[in-house]
Length: 288
Image 1 (cartoon, helix red, strand yellow):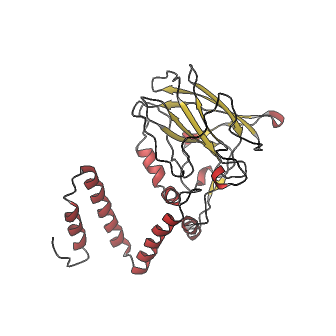
Image 2: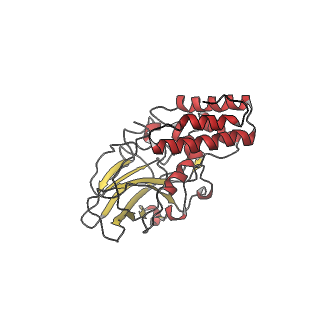
Image 3: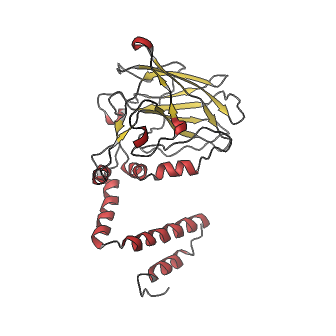
């Protein structure tokens, strides 16, 4: 190993120390990360005070992560990294449904529900919403037995794990498609909501003069053996924050038609999903 002599010499010595990593992918990723990180430090001439603040931010996002939120995931979302990774890894070459970031509020093992059942439990109030669709493969064939996992914020803009007024697993549910690939459930229309701002990510937003308000949406995770797990969101087409989502999650194909019912009747959302062939691999839940 060579002795460090100048700021520029540090990179080469560091890369050389990593070069014996047996895992080829780990070696490639860490070398690229290190090159870009050193280039960033050089470009902005990072001060010692700024470096200390950056380290403290990393410590704080870990400390702010708990059973009700994942501040680490939120940081990746607010920097656009989560959306970038989702788009890079889901190019829908055969017209598959577009993917979206997972977000910090998905919980595994939501209740299994019957077709047409409501995920708005124990007196959840709001505008009734009926959600229907069909799950197909890339050749347009209906997929029976696919699982449609849906979760959303309440009409006051809170997920159940954030809100002591909501019952456990409220506004979450898993549905199976029928023999023609169809699914149907009932819920209440979701509201837009602010991402959590009580931690270091909120401080970052305020320092950048960015608003925290996500447009109203429903999350979906659609899966079936022999197909890639689709993680996506469907956004309300009338939300004022579609073009200023703080986590950059909105793309044109993710905007759905939340059709209002006549005279206060049940609103409707009809949205189909197309799965890509591949391995059925689920993400790690960001919260328990």
